[in-house]
Image (cartoon, rainbow, N blue to C red; front, top):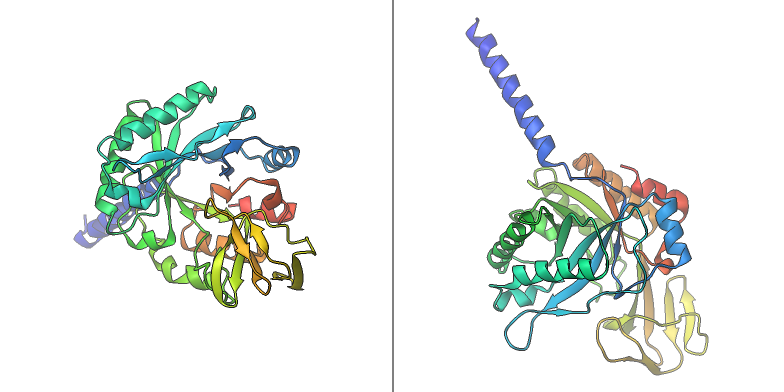
Length: 342
């Protein structure tokens, strides 16, 4: 055989093998339309059940509890979910545990075992059957990467002994770092900006904040799917100074708020308001402003399509954050059909 021809055949064969390996590496197991559920009580209303059925959602990534820095130097569970009703039939539950980054500086020797055992016990107690996976959510950094990865390896070993797999969340800034040891990652396409700034950028999702990180996405050596935001937030400012995020404020209350722009309100009566960031109420003062942040469907879809262009297959499984009636109503059904479409 001609040496040049032989070299060409070897080169093509190697390229095909590399392509096949890359394709397998990027495959997320058991692709399903999915949602995140992030409340502390599991109870679906009629609108939420209809959303699941209408959009053929078959998987719920459900926050079971947080892990926070404990007072005795040991990470501790917090805000554990309670089940007020059964999970609908045909819905797979993926227990999700949010691990605060600061607790990784504490004693984590037994943390993996304790988390897995607690999740398994919660499944048994609440008749959550057929659980195949655990997801860990953590905003880890370079300084905590070594401890976090060691923790994930311990979680993975404990799960594999039970025939389960491990997924993790991936934030945009983490795309430039070494991928964590797990089966696949969920790329969080939300909370991409700075919510404390009162400028024109949307801190939930803004293309200008996303673009610098996308150069890493094609070569990222971990299977990925994407999660997109459907929630809104209410941010309280005194002038341009951020005060807090309001949780349960009724912006339609004309005794307290006056609408001055489509997404901006001014406080006309001082009082205390519930906050989602602290246990204490937040005091709103006359003259304060509330900015409502929500991502237009056109922006979500543009980023959705750009991710697919740069990393084909990333939208084969889409997760929306998060399942709640007030969030569902932000978009039309045809928007959801496009968001869930690969």
